[in-house]
Image (cartoon, rainbow over all chains, first blue to last red; front, side, top):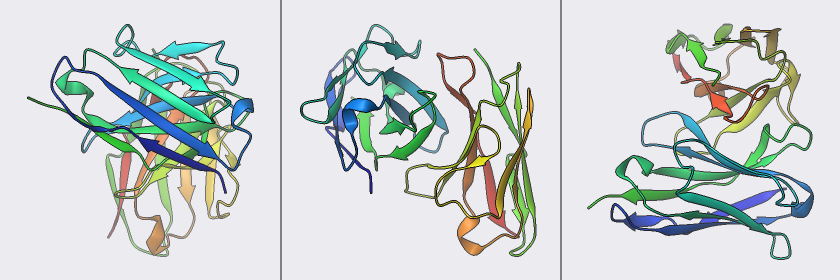
Length: 120
Length: 108
């Protein structure tokens, strides 16, 4: 069974930085696009960022553009999200999600999530 | 940006009965519509994509229909494990990928 395991969440002050990781296993990571999706406490799902299988195509939600950077290391089967200039409204559980393989944007597997709390 | 609107916000249904959840897009998304189920403390699970194709391992009691701007998720005979929050998501015109605000399906 596909596994996605996020890490790197925690408590950070406004204006601070954090780097999330998502370790993928049990599938050919290098051949699938992946995204980060977040969920603020008690709220719905918000797509954050997308990266294609090769890393050649990268997209961001307007709410994080210029502050977050998505990347991947296919040799390590790992996805990253570098988050800078964090704001209180970035507080959320961050999920990595794998595309099902054709659209880039249908998420057939998700990690368990990692909580990022931005607070002073 | 395509706005996805789900209704109702909360749906109360008895076990064994049928549940019908709605999702409307602010402009046509063709059939590029997915449904997810999320239980408390868990990640979302893909149920339906392409508006009507069940994902791997999803029971036949879950069905999706619609195209353009109006979509429906039907659960034919509710089981106890089906009470959860359901989200629709469009992937026809992105970025951004957009989700509805969710419908909470609760036990009546």
